[in-house]
Each structure stands twice: as C-alpha cells, then as structure tokens.
Length: 370
Image 1 (cartoon, rainbow, N blue to C red):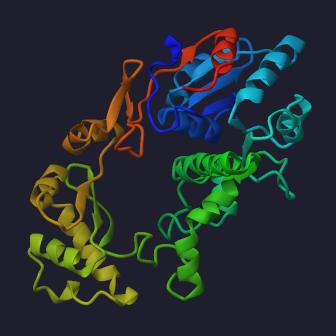
Image 2: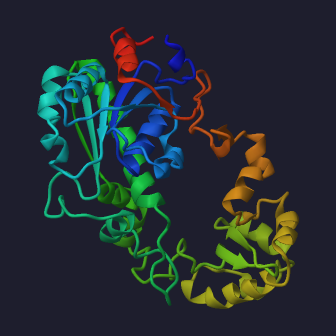
Image 3: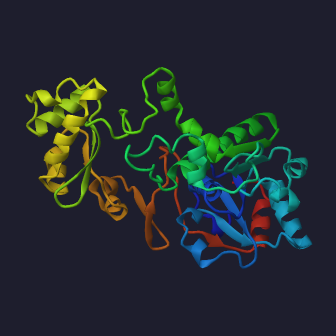
C-alpha cells in the first residue's frame, strides 16, 4: 500500500470512491465512507480549493487532486479513475455532470459495476429538479420544518442537520453502499438518485404514521415531541443555561418528579390528556428557573429522570461522557467528532485531507485494492 494511504482503516478499505468537488451532503457522505476506510479521491478544479474549503471539517479522510475537467488531459485522467472506482459521488444540479462529459450511461459503459451516486435537493426528476434551494427549502417542502418550534413563532431553522446531512448525506452513503452490495453480487452497477427532500420526508415516517392515526396534531406545540409536553422540552435555568427533559416513559417521569420533590403533587399526575399540559409545563419552568444548570445536572446525574444539560459545541467535546468514549478526535490540530458508528473488528479512523498528484492516484488504482 502507498504510504499516502497507510492512514486508512475500517471495513471499507477495499472500496474506491471518486467524489466530484461540491459542498454539503456529497462531501458528508464521502467523509463517512472515508472514515470507514474507503479510498476517497476528491476532484477539484485547479485553484478551486479555497480558504473556506480548508475550514470545512467534512472534507477529511480523503485525497484531493486538482483536475481541469475542461481539458482533454483532465477528462482522460478523471475517466481513468472512474473506470477503476466502485462509487462515484456527484452533487451538481441535474444536467451539469452530463455537460462535463460524465453522464451515468457514459461512466457505466466503461465501468459496468460502478455505483453512480447522485445527491440533489429536489431529485433528478420532477418540476423542481433544476431549481435552486438549500436545506431549509427542502425540509420545508417535505413538511418536516412545519412541526418544529413553538406555536407563537415561525419554525426555526434546525441548522442544516435534517436536509444536508440526515436526509441527504447519510441517505446517499446508505444508498451507495446498498447499490455496491448489489453490484458486487451481480456485476451490475446503477444510478442512486438521492434527494434531500425525499430523505427528510423519510425521516418523518413515524410522525406521518401518528398523523394518519390521529395521534399527531398539525398544530405546532400540541404534541408529545414538539415541546408541548412538560416532560419533553427544554427549560431555562437561573444562570442562563438550559436543561433538556426527556422523561416520556412513566418510570422516568416518576424519577423526575421525585427528584424535584413533586411526587405527591396532584398537578403533575396523570398527564395523558394534552389539555392538562400547560399548567405543569409552566410550573416546571418556574422551578428550573430557580437554580443553575450545574445544580440540575448534579441533582439528576445518577438518576434515570432523563434530565441533561444543553451543552454548547465546545462543552460537548469536553464532557466526561465524550472524553470517556473518545467521541472527539484531533484532525489538523483541531477537535472534530470521531467517526461513527463504531466497528468492533475493523475500527474506523479519520485524518486530515491529503493533497496529492493525480498520477499517484492513477498508479495506486492501477493495482487491485489491498
């Protein structure tokens, strides 16, 4: 194995991935595959890797090569890599990769086992397929944004966790590996059409089921998981911090009440009726506001009351639970979330992106993967 690749470990060390340079869900999917050991090679146009890209932690665990896809030599080099790849990842708008000369049918003609994994917001077909958008737009149209937030305010953007990464990148990685399993069994590759709108909708399957059976209201902040329930929401503390309460099950709710000295208070009993939630919710808000976040964290630390502090990102990395599980690793001298999930026999690893010459990749890929 080339010294350039000796940092890789994980269950996917025999998988080769070509990633066309992009942003958001495509790089995240490539990162997941690279963390799990795949040899990911990201194609960047000459000079296209900017200072902004250098700060993108999702570009770890891969090699980066500069290729001019508008030159015959660049097209030839990219074509050679694609011919040796197991998975191709691209996240352009429909039609762009075709104009570059790398349409699925072209790539599959030279590499019949190739998994051509595509990620867009709206999908490769449909009336919105060529329209621009971002995470917030995709989850809005998927119906996933509407249930989030409090009743008296617009839905808050849930960062870009749902569309870009949950419904986008993770679904793309899953689809690519599913298709790769099929390709290795049958010798036939295929196109994977992953759309963030589709993925976000899929993530709401449970809520859709509840809605159809009358167990979920379309009105925000009236349901068990949307902040209406006094036993499943966040509360402000005296020091400006917050605690998260997730005591849905009766036995956990009982521990919550016991810890607060409310076990015998009738106000907090029998909360099966949604109409009864506002009063105990307001009462709990007053109680939690009397003490600091560390006070509540210490009080419930050894219980199953499902009360946890709401940590900032830097606090999460330093929390004893994160430290004990090595949940963060150092990438390029900065803490970053460790690869997940964890593999018992072939541990994954993450490393900073490595710039290399395309000839090095071509030579290493001219041999069977080790």
